[in-house]
Length: 230
Image 1 (spheres, rainbow, N blue to C red):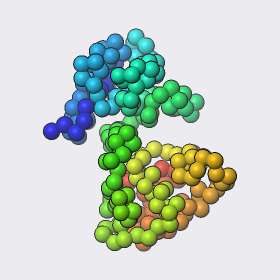
Image 2 (image 1 turned 180 degrees about the vertical axis):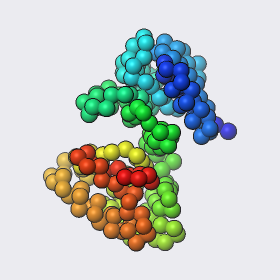
Image 3 (image 1 turned 90 degrees about the vertical axis):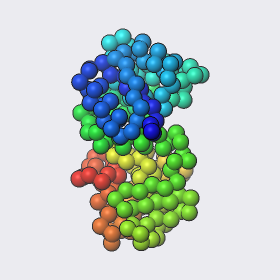
Image 4 (image 1 turned 90 degrees about the horizontal axis):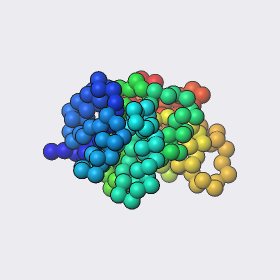
């Protein structure tokens, strides 16, 4: 049984085949396109739950495709992840501001790809977010409880919001200012270093269970939640 339909728009056949294989093995239904014209036809024939779109395509850029789909009533709410070899911050910002819900910089692992897809799908289907579990760390948002290997953790309200946000957005780096926008009120007058204080508190709560390493510092950029090595 399919857990969702994903459209892969990628003109390089070996990369597209690798992505499609990974998605099918994970249980997704996959439809493919090598250029934007075919992608539009695929969307009309079988509306996807999410699109993976390469930035550089032969007939128009993937970012232009995403922008144009955002302007159409029948496709404006289809979430998209931009695949790009462009690693500069300005390119990533342009992609997100252009309408992409997330981006993945090439080369990427199958694990990161699936984590990003799951995170975006959870954001657009919030009812799926009630219970999130990683490496025995479990957040039940309905009951507002956190446990590790079955033992309850006591977190302050800000640490709880941080952990829930991190666990529903795995493998992605967030700057202090981005975390302030997501966790605190956008209008709140709070210093960036406030984030560091709450990150330390969250790590202290996770430390007795050997899970403090899940919240990783990415020097010069911010923080990331990951089950892999820092």
